[in-house]
Length: 63
Image 1 (cartoon, rainbow, N blue to C red):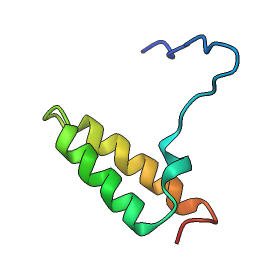
Image 2: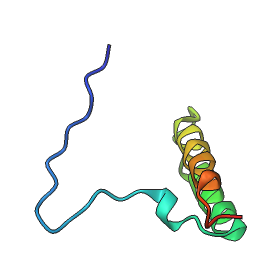
Image 3: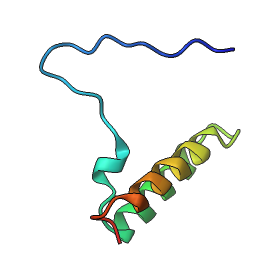
Image 4: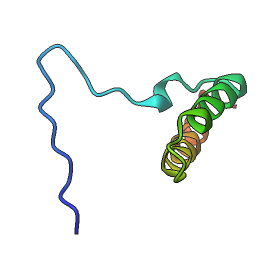
């Protein structure tokens, strides 16, 4: 079992979440295209992006 990743975030900073920037279908398309381009070849980044997109689509501000 993997240990959870614990990162100390300096005061005044917050954790970045891609979902906060995925507001339109165009945002989602550009994000997914960029993740596919940067994926290391094992699909890990593409899978993470799909998870982010699924969460974004549950947000009321996203179409």
